[in-house]
Length: 335
Ligand code: NDP
Ligand code: MG
Ligand code: MG
Image (cartoon, rainbow, N blue to C red):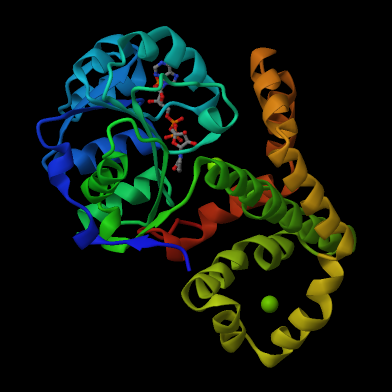
């Protein structure tokens, strides 16, 4: 059983008298910064001039260029997009890190794949909330927290884990539960999950189902409901009660169809592909490809993004979602 930590394991005093620089004020940055501030931790924000800078200032934070924020900080949490972290680290973070500081991340990519190699005299920690940033903030405001993962890569001060747990308490996560992992495990499983199941696997499954129905002559709107819209309702049931909870709620016909057909759709070739994908994550093939793609201006990435946006399911979906009046406060006129 994985080791779990809760409120009584964490002591906020490890952050007392310290300044935390949150570098980046996007999805995770704004949420972690605001939660820490509301927990009584001193927070400054490190950014470049622009949209996020204006937002952080409007939210009442002291905002500085990254160099300046790091100079003022004892704890530096890197919440920039993973693909820009290494450059910003080398230019603006590394020159100002002092012995005994802590360098933190919410995803292990740059440490695990050695894009960032911190000096030996700083703590290197991971606090990775298992939730999008906006939910991290909303759940905290409701008086609770989302679960997080922690990991210690370097323990220069001898108090790295205590600091990670204090940080988790500050963002609300020890209310929900914190699991200990390693940078390697977090990085590899996170990449695998998003590629094989959560983003890649699910998107492809939805599109294949939709295309099969539409090619067979069914109305795209109906195909959209069956293969995309209802997915949320099914996932909610799985989230609450596991696969058995979902199967308890659907009809016996659906449950029987699940058993006999699911294994045919996601069969041995998919499992073989998953194993190959995992291997390419573990041996660094995927990381090298993504780093190179960024270095070369992201042309392949942008082309795939455009192509996917033009898929028929996206057009049908954006029209249909406007008409889903049960989601909206006002009923549209003439519909
Ligand atoms: P976002 O893309 O939402 O935000 C990035 C922030 O970095 C923005 O405020 C942006 O400001 C700023 N920024 C970008 N480039 C620079 C630069 N060169 N110099 C200074 N600031 C810059 O990032 P996320 O919150 O999604 O991701 C942050 C980290 O959290 C990543 O490691 C990610 O893997 C991890 N993570 C994210 C989750 C999520 O919910 N999204 C979940 C768990 C982990 P500007 O307005 O100037 O562009
Ligand atoms: Mg990820
Ligand atoms: Mg049905």
